[in-house]
Amino acid sequence: KDFLKKYRNFDNVESLVLTAEDLKDANKFKFSNLKKLNIDILIKPKKGNLKQLFAAEKRRSRINKKKSINQLLSEELRSLLLKNPNLEEFSIQHTDCKDIPMEIWLLKELKSLTLKMTGMTELASNVQNLVNLETLDLSNNKIKALPEELSKLNSLKELNLVGNYLMKEFPNTIEQLSSLEQLHVDKNQANLWKKQLQNLKKTNKNLKIEEW
Image (tube, rainbow, N blue to C red; front, side, top):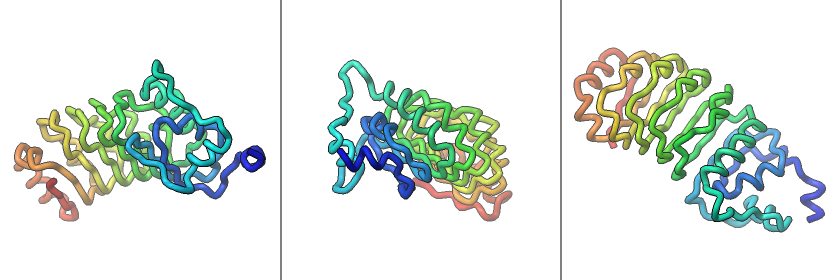
């Protein structure tokens, strides 16, 4: 308790791996140099992580049965993102988070964004704000189409669309991603988009298309 009362600022912490239940606890502390944030409900606690600090303070938050994971993500994740605008990597996966927090699109320093298995049905046009983004993982969601604004990400090098089975038509906006070096698609997508992918490789000699 005495340690945590004295040390509320963890300046040396650059990476946090949390479950949705940890978000409220994480907001009690300050991580002034945080660069990487990963939210995953499948994470199991390991020795020496922040779970022990929260437990030591005996203020460990328990999810009320009436309060859903989505509520925690909506309230606590938004707060945590606003406190850490200089994040370079953000990942949220294995979490039913159909309404992606709008605060993500304010992370101007973001280089890597993973929105994997979240149940999302569309990618917000505000993705164009992430001008430094190099890697975008949208795998295993229910996205039907990509916004035209995605083409404005001139730094994007890697895009993962695997498992978006509702995306029947080839996203033409990909053709405008001049810096794209890696495109991940599944076998079904590869068959549906065979001609478009062939043309894409002709126009972008540096592109590597990986089938999963």
